[in-house]
Image 1 (cartoon, rainbow, N blue to C red):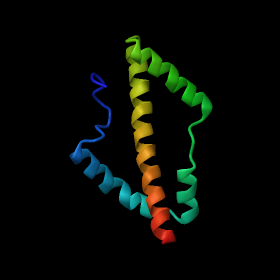
Image 2: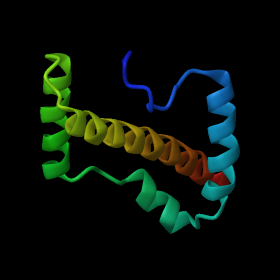
Image 3: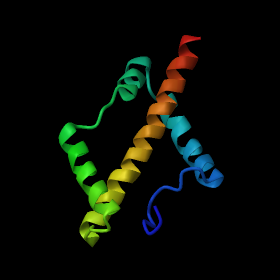
Image 4: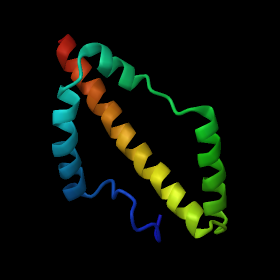
Length: 97
């Protein structure tokens, strides 16, 4: 998404390495139950509805500056949560082997 300067640059090897370095130790702090709960985490439907509304407005070029900041925060948080869920899943897989 060009124009959204604060978004995490997924796919950039330097960013991927930095996030791995940050989140690998964090995922190792999780016991099996906590890791399982992280992998099962789902966004609240009301929050998802707001994200969907902002996404539609973004696609139409109709976001205010305040909405753009809110949308960026949601996207960044979603990226972080997705990566943490993957790390938690890997932690569970390794602990079960």
